[in-house]
Image 1 (spheres, rainbow, N blue to C red):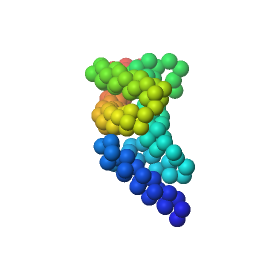
Image 2 (tube, rainbow, N blue to C red; image 1 turned 90 degrees about the horizontal axis):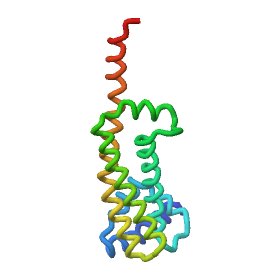
Image 3 (cartoon, one colour; image 1 turned 30 degrees about the vertical axis):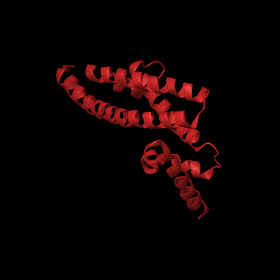
Length: 161
């Protein structure tokens, strides 16, 4: 019951900031970045805390994209994905990486020079970028999952043992 009340309190507090800065809805941010976990803590700077959730997730995806573009000391399954990526998808990954790098640079700037307005702008801009990026990554992963089957079938037809 207390957790539910904390979540409602968090949503109410966020709604004020959402209106003030034209931010995405609480549910949109929660679905994409799991910000409901904030409701268990006592928060003074809500937008900074939300920004940290967003930046953590984006940093994880940046590492994934980095590993796909430059697979050094990565798990074996990454090599199989990289091997089966089409050139078009590699180019898309490079663009995604550039966008994630730009977000990371903005994050550093906001982190070093705090203001509520800058936090809000970061959240808004990062959320918009994430909406595009996640669709692109999903397409690339779906393609990579399809390709191993195609290449394995082609390789088996050419094998004369």
